[in-house]
Length: 293
Image (cartoon, rainbow, N blue to C red; front, side, top):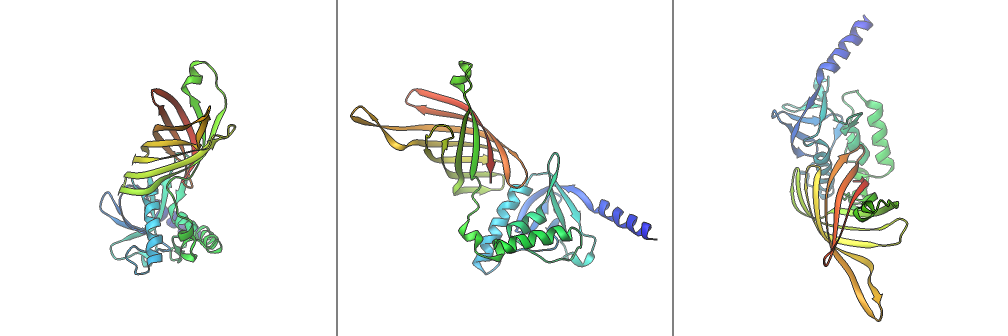
């Protein structure tokens, strides 16, 4: 008898799991699939952009941004809850997973880890995983548990560690180990934010690892899905180098075009073509960066 019951529930789980495509993020925990089905994540109490409390609206906006990055036009698996009492009237509830080539990431758990939700068990699936994620965010005072979100804004791009392949060195068959570290704020000022398309003012500051050459740049950035382009004005710090007795400003224009390979836990590999121009001199190189978002 027990064996038959186990087989029955396993069959229900398999039948309830399906790959879906999410077309719209309506709220922090309300999504519309391409076949117009409304779904939400089970076991989560999530702030809404319709809340009256401004701090909860702030967290809901951050959750929506996270959902856009991880759910829109991505490979998603939806595992519907087996308990009817967890379901809303017209909303299917369940567990969302983003599918990667060799693994998958629980979006329910990610919300709990970020402090975007409180764990309210209904469906007993993944109970221990969700409880641990909720306790972790509570102990760290994140999201709904404190003021973490106000003091630590979640910039779209932050720390990057890069390996540089310089065109001039490649022509001479010389490959010195050029590495750089930097912080890039891709959404310093958001101008257009439409699901997969973004137009922002952006900034970056960093230096080479073996050569102390601190720099900054500021400009514009256009993104469409995982592709992006940046046009920016650059300067070396300190801004002036002495040329005899006359100070000479060292500034130039730059253009980057790149592609992001998503990894788990808001990390990625960025492959960029970079071009720098000073008067009639061009410096071109390719950078491969490990980035956190």
